[in-house]
Amino acid sequence: MSKLNIFTKGFFKENAVFVMLLGLCPTLGTTTSALNGLGMGLATTFVLVLSNIVVALVKNQIPDKVRIPAFIVIIASFVTVVELLMQAYLPNLFEVLGLFIPLIVVNCLILGRAEAFASKNNVLDSAIDGLGMGLGFAMALTILGVVREILGSGSFFNFKIYPGDGALVFVLAPGGFIALGFIIALLNKLTKQS
Amino acid sequence: MEYILIIISAIFVNNVVLAQFLGICPFFGVSKQVETAVGMTGAVIFVMTVATIVTFLLQKYVLDVFEIQYMQTITFILVIASLVQLVEIILKKVSPALFQALGIFLPLITTNCAVLGVAILAVRPDYGFDLMQSTVFAIASAIGFGLALVLFAGLREHMDLANIPKGMKGVPIAFVTAGLLALAFMGFSGIA
Image (cartoon, rainbow over all chains, first blue to last red; front, side, top):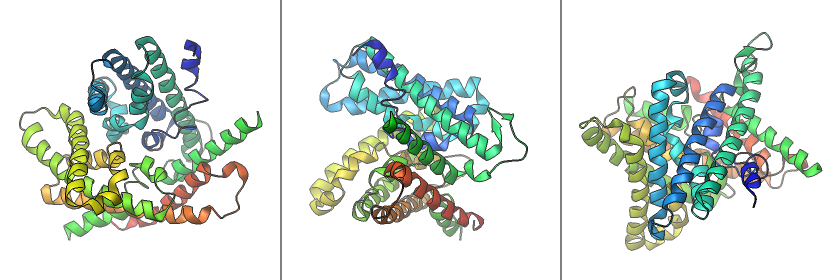
């Protein structure tokens, strides 16, 4: 597989959210606005790239039996790094994302990439894979965030685009499920036609 | 009274799945049949309760005492992962029948964010729970998870027979159904 292929497969063919349905909790929980979705997506990308690199570096030193706990410790360390960095430099975003920052640890996307890709490939490929998958995830979160923000609060990246408040339900929990359902249906239709 | 409030709030008003978006992966993964949903619920109630008690004690008597709260994420996930292993080993020895029933669900629980999420919520300073309240909170949250899961599995079993547009089949209609279920649960938000 070429480097470009490894990078781009995370966006469409194996998109974490729309195709593989991984990491749904942060996808739904943090996309109340486009900016929050983007922030969460980038935080996840950061953890994913670094954990993929470290897993690829140490894969030969870890005994097979304890590899999953070892991966989890590596991921948890980087999540703690993100948590502390965000608290220091982006306190507002940290407040909004709240519980979902420590929960990056249990995002199945990250453990899934460590197990399925980084533990079998070299460092460079793993870094590219992490970057592609992470940005694909961030893209999905931003799309969902944009849709929910436009419908729910009538704005686009905090710029008001129509008067009034929109349908509040799209910012609340039910709207998240419904919006994601319709986006996936739309993508299914588009990909089947081509 | 205080406990009743915690229970109602955790099961209905702030339902982990439908209001807080925790544990969505198993919510969609094991909700194809009511039977597996019940099995998963049993495993989650068990692990979530034990995990919350252990992590609560660790937070109070280790992390807070030595002022290393930033180790919370690593500590908690390690506790949960090893706890799941431990539960698996003990169940295999003590109750093979129960192990048969819950066995395949246990490894899945490590990456169930509801378990870690509830453990972190229970030690939040703004909740100010003591050990007993945390335990009740964990049990009630797990029951809330189970309730949502079993209800959703029941709906999905019927949905297989329904006539819906082709593009919506499978995952999309499941999301929309979950959204409607969440909408129904919002009706409880006035209670507590």
